[in-house]
Figure 1 (cartoon, rainbow, N blue to C red):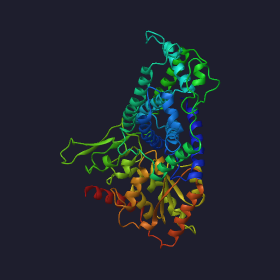
Figure 2 (cartoon, one colour; figure 1 turned 90 degrees about the vertical axis):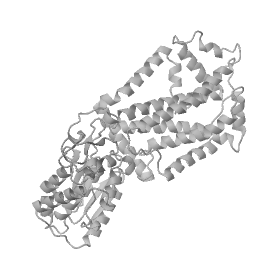
Figure 3 (cartoon, rainbow, N blue to C red; figure 1 turned 180 degrees about the horizontal axis):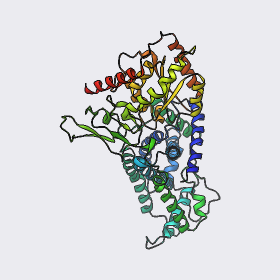
Figure 4 (cartoon, rainbow, N blue to C red; figure 1 turned 180 degrees about the vertical axis):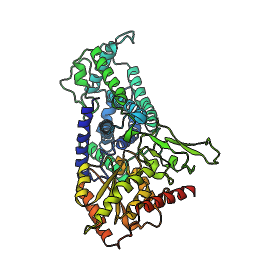
Length: 525
């Protein structure tokens, strides 16, 4: 996977996100939530599949499906819903994989999620294959014949499988039984794959918001009622079908496969599988700078257990100390840390975080760059408000805020921002501080917006101190394609802050020392 192709994938994804945000709004953007949408479709498949299993007959597969299709009140639309849900699962899973690849979230600690996700997608394609064959219409026969042709090229079976469909005798019921067994057994494998896919997440989110979940189900149901899934003529080994319906979502490979020798098909499939498995290695980057894992300063760690609770990846544990202090000490596993920096925002004494992004590093950066800039702007008719935003935020939004007179500062994730940095900016001369986070369902750190709000407004450690006027602090969402919303949120905040009395400005050293001291005291408590 070349760097150039990844550079092309990222802006393409950003453009699609922008369109979806304009159409749906960032709260309901289905592209943000393609992974959880895939889970919703799996639930639909499970529910509809249970009904279809009860009325399906192995002895007369096509006749039973035809009878289901003729049931206008229940059978037809449930079968169609089952079919469309399988298509939606594959599409959502592919979009989710592409999103993770474009955002370079497919290597390092995320390798297991990437590989297991690929296995789940492959199993879903096989599941769709067996589901089509169960219908045993002309398209099912076409799929079965192609599968037999491919497997006959392997030294597995004593007799060619293609003989089953020669027409000399009826297709044995054992064929349909094996097909049904695989179709029922694969969901168990899908369950294991999904468990592995989220096994390294502390609090996995499996479903989209309820409104979006029901919207997906409703859309699939309407499609099933208005455009019922087609049913071709019954399979007949002695008659060549003039045309068969094709499914581009789950059987896109069939026309190509039929034109190639079996060994070529297997070779191409092997190349694709190996390329997918090698993605984590091909996209990996050196763990330095912004990608450096978090470290712990044991001298500052109070053993409060807050950073392990907040870490979205369960990369931090509490272990026994090697000194004479009675508390435990945090320990970061670099193999699990994704460098989101959320732990830095959760540590009151600022003793943990990626190198260069700990709470103390943030205070140093504000003291050296932001506070002097605030003093220069204090003579302006409208003093500058400070805006913190995620490093993943759209560059156009950041520039537009600067044009509005804001002092824009970046953090690696909104959850990385330490509350003392907000206080320091206010005491250094900022009339107000606004923090723009990514949409909650598109946060690279997964839970940055969540923990940011809890620390600033709900007293979650490391909380913003009660002495800070909450009217001067606000959190907004910066979503691609919604520049108007970003600017409107900032303008509203600036207008509200302008009605407040000016704040007194403290000296550089006094501000920094006071913030650090209060954080240390909070950690000891």
